[in-house]
Every structure is written in structure tokens, then in C-alpha cells.
Length: 287
Image (cartoon, rainbow, N blue to C red; front, side, top):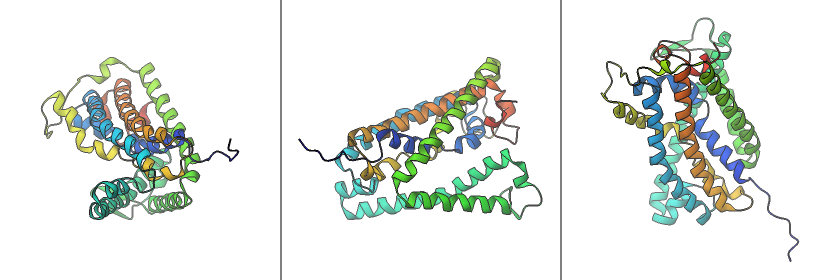
């Protein structure tokens, strides 16, 4: 019998927290008003994310099979190399790189937006300039830059270093959302989600399921992040197959998470009034 110590690394639950946390993030807190408006209400938006569940889970199942087969860093580019060779892998790798770089400014903006709702003084005074109707302040630029650098330094140390922080943030995020959802159900009214479907005048859809399918246009953006799991699988400890299954779990639970929040927040407060408020729906749960 071997007395060598068992490999210790990032556990399957750590990978789930990394994947789930990378998907849900803080973007939903700022974007949920837009989901309701673009879908014609919280219910069609919630149904839209349940439809996303049917679409995304097969992708998760594919990753769940590929991760144990190729437990190497690289994610999609490594899978593409094994299946199609260098050229397709090259395109896959640079495509992923472009997507990750493009999302950095968006994440920085969402973090500063959330902080500005909590601390209005951050956006007090005269803005530096204006882009497409949005005021840009020096304080938010500095904060967004600092957060970006800190995230870079954290991830540069390796997945095991980021796993502990991500686990805490994931639990904190889910707990905050659950508290807001429960508060909405306790203090809400079924009349608040009426009308079930009411499209905007310039909407491209004219039916309930048209509004539900409308969410699919942006769903891929808000469900991105599960690919962080295969990219760090080399640091896994224990059964790699369990790590692969966390891809399916993170994608599936993220869709359900969004759907439940949409219904609970729409139940808590007249969803049409949400659309006239400058603050996100989540910030009005305890008013």
C-alpha cells in the first residue's frame, strides 16, 4: 500500500463556486430591470431563462465529458486542438481571449455602478465627460481600474489562491439574493406581476413566448463564465470527473437562479414601476 500523500488541490465544490460565481457575478443586479423591459415583464423573462436552461445544459454535458478526458489548462482551445488541430485551436484560443478582454470594462463598470448605488457620493459633482447618455466620473474610473488590477493579480497567483475568495463571494452573493427574494415574497403581492406580458411600444415581439425568446439574445452573455472550470482543472484534487459535473451544475443553477430572482422581484414590486426607477430592482427590495 502506498503511503504517499493524496494530491491536494482545488476541490469540486471550489470549482462550482468559481464557475457559478463567474456566471452570476453582480451584473444581474444592474441588468434585471432591462430584462423585464425587453421581455415584456418578469414572468416571460423568467421563462426565457428556463428556456436557456434547455439550451445550455447540453453544452455543459459536453464539457463534463471533455474535462476528465483532457484535464489540462486551456479549456476550449485545448479541446479544439485535440479534435481539430492547430488552426481551429488557434482561432478558439484567440476568440476566447477577445471575449475575456472585452468583458473586463463591462465588469469594471458594473462594480462601480453597484458601489455608486450604495455610496452616492462616488458620483457626486460634475462628471468628466458623457458617453451615450452616461456620465463618467474620475472616482469610478479609478475604482474600476483598481478592481481590474486586483483581479489580475489574484488570478495571476493561480486558481487555488482565487478559489478561497471566490467561495466566500459566491456564498455572500447567493445569501444576499436569497434574502432579497424572501423579502420580496413576504412583502409582495401577486398583483405586482400584472400584466403578465406587456411589451414596449418599440418591442420586436408581440406575444408572451416572443418576449421569453427575446431574453435569448443576451442570455449567452450573462451565462458566460462556466469555461473557467476547465481552464483550471490542472489544479484539481481528487476525482476530476466530479469537477466536470460542476460545469453542468453551475450552468443549470445559474439559469434557475435568474428565473427565481425575476419572479420574486416582480412579485415584490410593481414591475412596470421598476422600469421608471433609476435604481436597479434589487436595491428596492427593502423599501
